[in-house]
Structure formats: structure tokens, C-alpha cells
Image 1 (cartoon, rainbow, N blue to C red):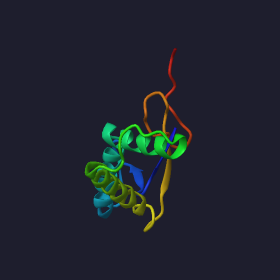
Image 2 (image 1 turned 135 degrees about the vertical axis):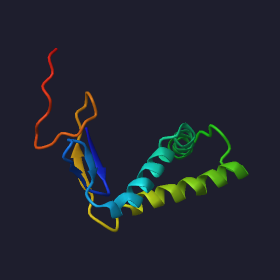
Image 3 (image 1 turned 180 degrees about the horizontal axis):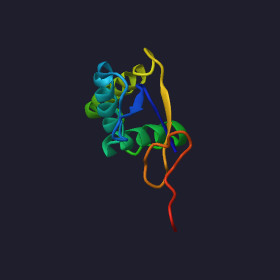
Length: 114
């Protein structure tokens, strides 16, 4: 697994990962908020409904309601804000251990006994 972050992490003296620069804290917070919104069931359901209309011409719900339109605009704004985090600075690729979700640094991972 991997994650691409719009900010850099470094290993601290206590072997935890922290932001490389404190000035990146607002970016990290915005990333977390956006990711939280983009993984909510209501958002995922909305996107699946939109795809069903586009790909199979089958409407699960009416996309013509006021609520649908408001949600569509809200979700487009969230997606735009999320993607803009990657436009103004470099992005960083981090590999994750698939079993415990921890970052893999320098190709080293904790050996596990099975």
C-alpha cells in the first residue's frame, strides 16, 4: 500500500513521524478534513448514484432534486479543495505496511513471526 501526501513527514527522535515543517500544519489539517469528507458513506453513495446514471442509464434516486444539486456542488468543492493541495508544492510518496499500516522507511519493516 502507499499514500501520497501533500506535505513531508520526517522521523523524530522518538521514532514517530512528524511534519517536516510546522508551516505545513494547515495543509495537513485540510488534507485530513477533506479525506474525512470524501470517505463518508453519504459522499460515496452520491458518487455511486452519479456513476449509475452515467454508465448504466439507471437512476437510483432523482438527481434533479434540490438536495442532489446542493450535495453535488458541495462535493465538487471538497474534491477541488483536496486536489488543489497537490498543486502548490511537491507531493511525497510513502509506502505503508499492509498489515499494520505503519510507514516503511528505507525498505525496513519489523519482522513478524507467524
